[in-house]
Image 1: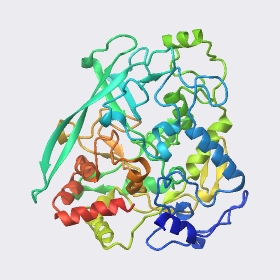
Image 2 (image 1 turned 60 degrees about the vertical axis):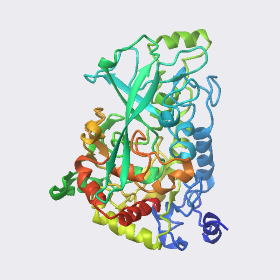
Image 3 (image 1 turned 90 degrees about the vertical axis):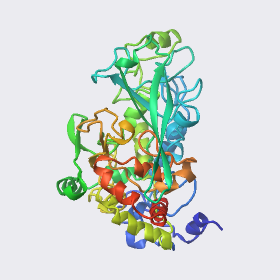
Image 4 (image 1 turned 120 degrees about the vertical axis):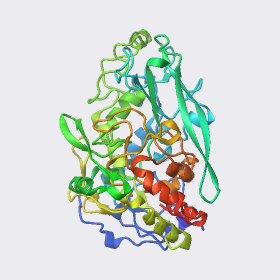
Length: 475
């Protein structure tokens, strides 16, 4: 019997009835041998392709019904029709949330195997474009929509090629880093000079721990920012503050902590062209795609998806279980954890945080108190850190500001669930644009505030480096 089935067999059925707020306590959870809880009562003990895409055990009753509805909306392919499940396009980047977030994870990006958009399908990436001075191009939005419904032109197609460079650890073992070079072709309004173009790419984030992120004790995050000053290691994290829904908020989600919420409505609008109450205009408003679409009989005087449906998607994402740590008694994992701390990775990838007492509130006002008062282990401080501009001439600097975040600043990536990405999504591409092909490359791209930890890892003997990687695989 495999481990996930064993875990399911011994894990008690502990469900919380709709309306109860005290039916499941962390002390009630029976933790299978070899596991450690990662997110309190939302921890799930699975080791399968569904490890990111299963509900927490407190989800029941009406919430389970709404979870399933949100799951369906998240995964089902949308069409260009005006009925339920329609509203796709006229231009888009993906035809469903799940097309880019397969199994609530990171769909394998096309930048490697297919080298970009390709003639069909989708690239599983968001391609941000601006002028070199930061201004937007007239007739385009912030994202190039490289797909379109029948009869409508995509805004452009992106392609990538790679520069490679080989490096060595002090003990002689070599590793290779790959730097992407992005290009946009087939501009629908005519060629834009590469000399005036700046382009950066994002591959999907794992949707692990979204409810916990929305429930973070923000006072704790701000306290970490005040404390995050380790001059001996060159580390000084800071908060990103963004304005959303007319309010100045602490940013916690997104690659640069540039959002205060899970951007469900923005994702449906920007990524799929699906209008909703928060974004009622088509993403191609003002472009000639609107005229083309109207000629095809499409309607632009009604919303494509309701606020209630959007909240069900929000609920689905926040009610997902968080994979528990695995193999915690494995001697190599325990050694790797020790090396993780010796390399000072924990100064940014903070192991333990807490959620606020009230839990989370969804986008249409529904409360999820079960997410409150939890001890969680995301391995992130959710702060911005300068990740450097030196490696291969650019480092991780993408020159694209987001809120207060500069191009070289990135939110510390939460590591919970990262060791299951290959099992869930079939690949080990990491970092914001997937340039790292494995854990070692991801670590060795660290510069700036990550330079000291990278060098501590680099100077370990091979067996210790391997153990640290094994620890990451256990998360």
